Image (cartoon, rainbow, N blue to C red; front, top):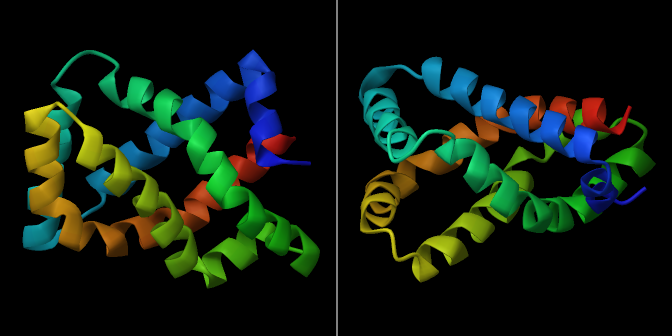
Length: 144
């Protein structure tokens, strides 16, 4: 089953978006050190743009994200454990996802988001990689 099929069921899509937002909140909250403080501050600023901003962004990015993740997920299914496969290939998963956000930021008219993303982009890759196992679990749950 294509990951994009998850978008055809409104309830599954809403649950997927909520679970992804929760995953991001949890990942950001768990960050430590100087880079963690910077990411927490940037994330807080982005969340403060408007109520539900993160959810709106996720809803907007999700169709494209599922398309780029689908081949990797299929490889994972063929391997017998897509969650384990994503965990073992977290660099590829992260690069795929950040490719989407990089392209979107280039087209963004929101100077606040663009500035924050630009300052944090170099350190984000490792944090996205750290979130990949959780992402895989969220996707698996959404398919149930």
